[in-house]
Image 1 (cartoon, rainbow, N blue to C red):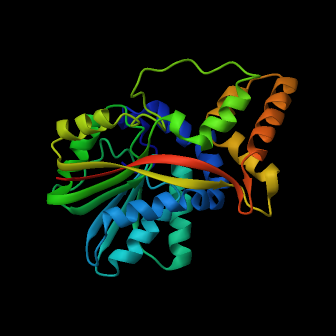
Image 2: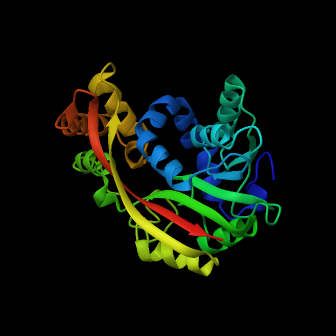
Amino acid sequence: MTGNPAAASANAEQIEAWNGVVGAKWVANQDRLDRVLAPFGRAILEAAAPKPGEHALDIGCGCGATTLELARQVGREGRVMGIDISGPMVARARDRAGMLGLSPVFEVADASSYPFEPGSFDLLMSRFGVMFFDNPPSAFANLRRGMKPGARLAFICWRALGENDWVKVPLAAALAHVQPPAPTPPGTPGPFAFADRSHVLSILERAGFSSIAIEPFDAPMAIGTPEGGIEEALTQSIEIGPIARLIADAPEDVRARARDAVREALLKHRTESGIALGGAAWIVTARA
C-alpha cells in the first residue's frame, strides 16, 4: 500500500483532498503549523511515554514532526513507522528525517486498511490524525491487530468547534459575508469528528480496546508570529481550515470583505507573541 492508495481505500474523498490542495497547503505552512500545534504535540508525547527500544506507529504522521520525536525517544534500538494518506506530506517528512539523520520508516497508505504485521507495535500514537476515517470502528480494529497484547494507544483530537477559538473566531467573522457550510451529521470525517467524548469511547470499545481514558487538554495557539504580524496570521487562518473552502468560489469583492472581517476579529486577540487563540482537545489513551 505505498504510492497512491486510493484504489484500496474507502477514504477516497480524504485521500483526494490530502494529496491535492489541502496537502500542498500543509506542506507550504509546515513550519508555522508545527509551531502552532507544538503544545498539543508535547502533550500527546507525554501521554504516550515512548520508551527506548519500543516499536511505535505514528498515525496520520503528516510532515513528520511527531514521528521524528518518536524516533529520537525510542532511540537506535527502537523502530518507528509513520503512516499518512498524503504523498506530499510524507515526502516532506522523509526529507526532514534525512536532514536530521533519523531513520523512521514512512508509508503513503491508509491506516484504516493497511496490512500491519499482527502484534508488532508497543505504541500507537497520533497528533490530530485519527478523525478522518470513513469507518472509525473498523479502522481502529485494524490498528489494534497490529499491536502487541497490552500495547498502548495514545492520540489527541479536537473537541467541538465551539470550544476552539482558533477556528470559531475567524469563521464567525467570515460568515458575515459568505454562505455557511452545509450541515453535516455528527461524526462525519473531519477535524471535529471526535468532539463527542461518548462517541470516541464507543468507537474504541467496539474496536476491542480497554482501559480507555479521555481527558480534556486546552492550550493557547499562537497564530502567526510577532515578525509576520497580522497579515501572516490572516493568511494562516484563511488558507488552513474551513474558511478556504467557503471563499474559494466567492466573487473577489466578497472575498475581500471576508478577509477584512477576519483581520479585524484577529486583531482583538493580539499579544506579544502574535495572535493567540484557544485550542481545546481530548487526550485519549487505551490498551490493546
